[in-house]
Image (cartoon, rainbow, N blue to C red; front, side):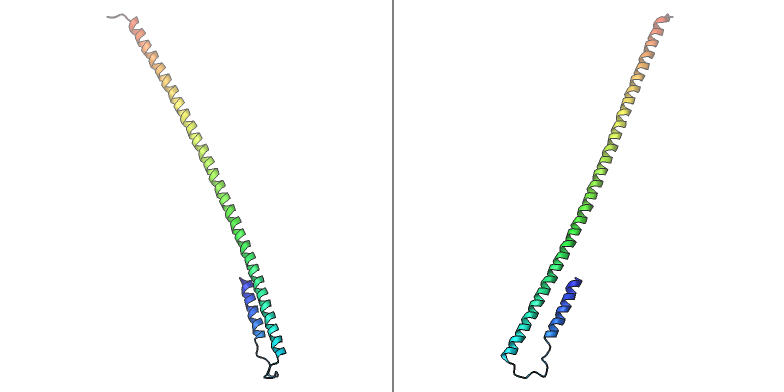
Length: 139
């Protein structure tokens, strides 16, 4: 942007220099050769101005392209980091869920073992009661 402004200002000064009123020493009537020379100067100034403007436009386009590439690169990095973070969170969540499932299975297994033991104790107590009842005479 600064380059564009600088070139525009330079162009204004250049056109101002060529647009100055002719010196008072020149005769009021101009010769065809003088008109031809002045036209040639104007053409050269216009050509130089066009070249300068084109160069400025190319520089601006290059700078814009570079900035756009930089923004895209930065956006890609940010997106890649977000994806990586999401994958890590999913992996962590999955491992946490797996640990919870494992703990629940262990609890269920323990409860099943406790129930089996309680059933065995109850069976033993019932057998003992029936054995004691059979061994004691009825009165």
